[in-house]
Length: 233
Image 1 (tube, helix red, strand yellow):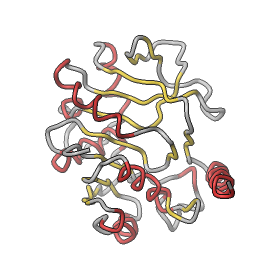
Image 2 (spheres, rainbow, N blue to C red):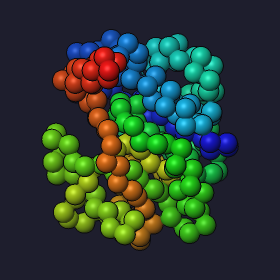
Image 3 (tube, helix red, strand yellow):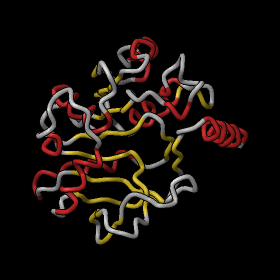
Image 4 (spheres, helix red, strand yellow):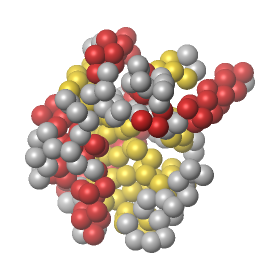
């Protein structure tokens, strides 16, 4: 993915993972013998992304120590440090000086997914020319989130009801989406996407393959079982 940067969102406190996250950041919780964030980094590396930005806040030093400069994964990692977690929108806005002026990929550190991240280069290349501000990867609503997030119609994402699909935590964004966020301010991504969707400036696609949101200890155990079963075969 020559020239296209990727951001991994790892600054959250992981309150739903407590007590596991009292002494360890959620991104470093392990499944299959490696941290959750390592699974994401390895998939990014395999997909051709070489320049990564990781935002950190809760137990930030532990993540930086564990990942280093990324050379062990064949990538280069730089860190966007937040004194307090700024939510997804605020965290991305804070990292813009590291991400540059071109569209970039952002992915949550606490998901496990077999989506082909390399294909998002095409979406990124077409964002600016046609004025779109974001391209989201959506998945079927999981049992723990039956209400979904968004609707997808003719390749465009909207917040209209019924929300038949859930946001996967994988998206490509134009820096322009975050232009009005004050650096260091807390801001939810949904608050930025809603007006863009209303203007028809958010596209998307439906991923029907493997996707797991590792948001609770029970889901972490489920991923561990899934990885063990895959290894057994």
